[in-house]
Image (cartoon, rainbow, N blue to C red; front, side, top):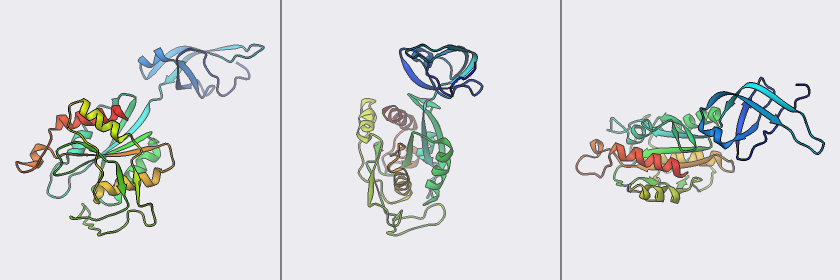
Length: 264
């Protein structure tokens, strides 16, 4: 096993990028797509071949640990605020599976506080390095699940947040751009909701409360990077809405978020 290079590609037909750890000998390889159906960690014999015009030796490494590198989705919900004792966003997020489609989910509960919510997400993302950050918030008065198209650089609260802040006509980021569009496929998410017979529509205003504050801060931070950011507003739960406001069952909100994750 002399002079083995740090990274050698495996020869196969259907290639998917994986990470192979074999006592530090190999850093990155490809592996047949059929192995994606197996467990995330497995012991197997792997043959690595480096080919060239004059041919190269074949190295066999036994009992290698193979980790399937799936995409990472950081999905967040908010704690209750105002007079509510629950928040439909977190009630739904917390009930999602740990894996949906191509994504492994990390679920994060956020404080309903200007600035602090975004700080919590950025701290988690620094370690996680997610491919997508999808934030969920509740919106009283809405009867449909609504992916947000745009975040604006404005804080304007009609009620205090959970730390007693009530900013009026302040920028989220002083000197920042006026607005950012979502970097997830908003229209495709809305179409996926309708395909699953869930009331859904694109929204063009995320408000100016903590939801928008979080959305704008993250889009500003990740502008020009490969990390995509989106925000979805969900209706209140029936027990929150009462008789006078529209609401949606927890089951349907969970279904909606699952469909959204699959559509990203």
